[in-house]
Length: 236
Image (cartoon, rainbow, N blue to C red; front, side):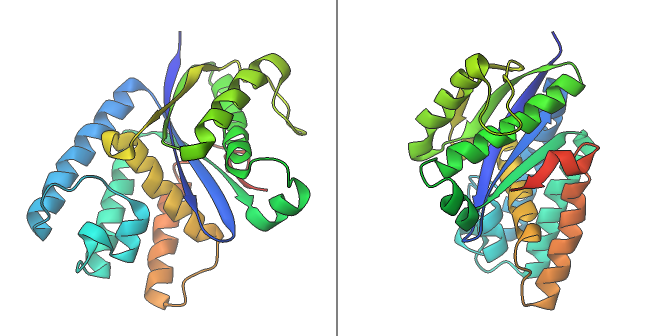
C-alpha cells in the first residue's frame, strides 16, 4: 500500500482559524526530523538557549519565551532555515482556513475547529486520491475538540462529510492520533508553516521590515503546496 504520514497543527487569530497538514513519506519525515534536530542544536549553541523544547511559530515571531532577546533578523533566519528544510525534504503541505465571524453567523450550531479540521481532511483526502495513497493522521492536541474531530472522521466514512464537497474519507486510515507538539518535529514544522501561511492571508504588519520578511517566508510556504495550489490552500 502506498501510504503517507500526515501531521496537522493549527494557527488562529481574531479573524481566522487555520489548519495545515504536512503530507509526506516515511523517508521524507525521517529527513525532516534529522535536519530539524540538528538545527535545534545549532540554535541552542548560538543563542545560549538551554533545552529548546520546540520550534513554535507564534513564539518565534513575537520573540517570547525562549526567543526573548533574539533579533528580528536572527529569528527570520531561523524561520528561513526551517522552511528550507521542508523544501529540501520535498514534503507537501495543505492548508484550510475559516473566517471566524462569517462561520459563526452562518453555522452557529457547528463547531468551528472541528469543522475546519474536517474541511482540511477533505483536501488531504482529495490529494491522496490523486497520488493513489492512504494516510495516517497525527495532530497536535486539540483540547476540547478532539472528540468531535474523531467523531467527524468516523461519520464521514459512513455518510460522507458535510457540505457541498461531501465525500467519504476512506483514504484516511484508523483514527486521528493526538500528541503534544514538543514530541513531534513534523508537527512543529506544520505549526511554523501554518503560522506563516495565516499571517500572509490576514492583515499585514504595520512594520515594513516585518511585512517583507513575512512575504519572503510566505513564498517559501506557498512552494510546499501541491499543484493546483488553489485547491490545496483555501479560505472559506
